[in-house]
Length: 181
Image (cartoon, rainbow, N blue to C red; front, side, top):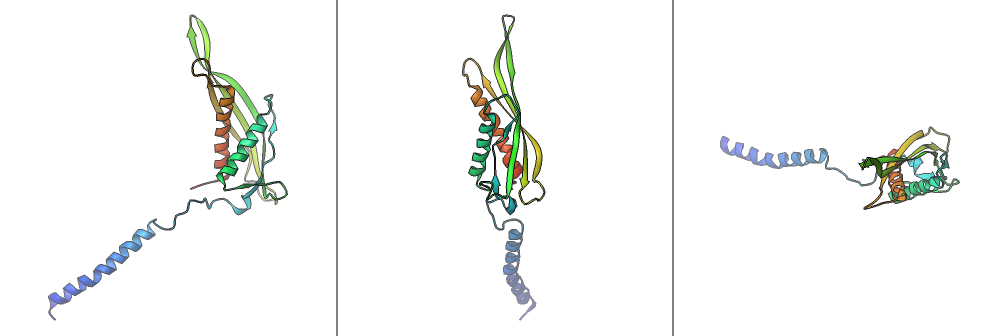
C-alpha cells in the first residue's frame, strides 16, 4: 500500500465520525425535548382556592365580576385547578380597591367641550398565600386594568369597558401565577 492510498482511506473513514459529531452538536445546541407545558409552576400551587374578592369601592357587584373572570381564566389556562378551601393548597384572595370612570377624549364643538370617550379604571390588591404556612407567592400585589367606551356613532358601553379592564387584570394575574416559557 502506498502513502496516497493510506491517506485516502483515512479521509473516507473520518467522514462518518465528523457527520456524527455535527449531529450531536446540533442536538446539544437546543434541538432537544420540547414541551408545551409550563414546568415552572410549583406543584404546591396547583390546587388553588379563589374566594370572592372584597369590594372597597362604591361600584356594586364589581367584586363578583372580577372574581368570576379570574376563576374562568385559571380554569381555561388549565395549569392550576380551582378547588374548594378543603382541597386547596393555596389561596388567591384580595379586594377591589378602585373603580374610576373618567373622561378619556373630548372635542370642542361650537365653544363647548363634548366628551366622546370614557375610560373605566379598576384596581385590585391580591395576595396568593400557601395554606401550609409557607411563604406567600405574592402579597398585596396591586394590579390595574382599564377599558374605554365610546359615545355617539359606533357607541360601546361601560359594561364593555369593564370587561376590557377585567381582561387586563386577569392577564396580569395569570402572569404572576403561571410563569410560562
